[in-house]
Length: 326
Image (cartoon, rainbow, N blue to C red; front, side):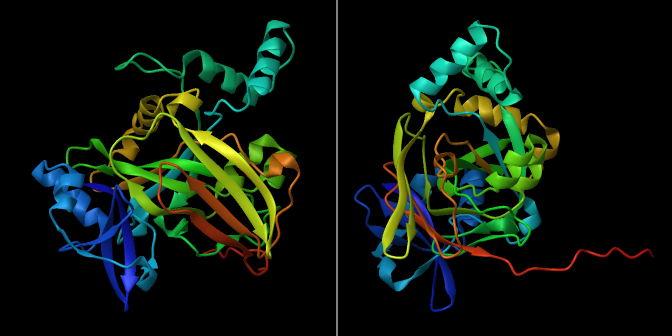
């Protein structure tokens, strides 16, 4: 049975592959893209994993292909990339300190208040809406990069910092209802230096590339996901730390995060794709790491068979943008 989907290119031709429970890759026949398969599953009412499994007859050697992002849209403007923050529990010590500060009546930052709101109301009963999380926009489908492709920070960025996360992938059906295709491993990639200057710069710090893949995991996300985030500099490991995800390690349910994204009618346009990041509690920036061009980000998690790796690059400097009047 199909566990996850990959998109690849071989000899200049795109294709889709499926990974089974043993990690073996299979060529999916009659599949120009993951989006085409998802649209077909939606139209026929056939579970996507079942639809794909029926078309897997030939094994595929992943060493002979170039892996791409596992989901994309022929018109990038119809793929929205967004995310949520302050959704993961972090360390028990950190939570305890926040609770003690709240109990003592100390002044809390807006970030801490929102975190505590999530702890109190981020996991409502099924069918009910809980408290809203922090939300941000990253860009359209043009910002997504696949495995082994550079994550390029803008020339004006303060830094390029990794954020190891899991994201949900969604297709809006003809009636304007979101359908979840699956989950991807991601590097949400942010400018933490700029954000630190003033929290109101958070929105701008998110407007940059993000990496996802190589796999699109079908079915439900495990409740307890264990991963490792690592930065390599040359032949050495500069920084490494485990990270946790899944609802057992979150202050919100996935359903609550989905509701507060798709409650906005503008995000329910038929035919659109969405990649929505769920957040993280693990950052090298929090440990004082300063990334450099050429560093290699490496993210892996036990819910996924393959890691996500991306080198860090910086875009060349540009002069200030000049706007002319018509």
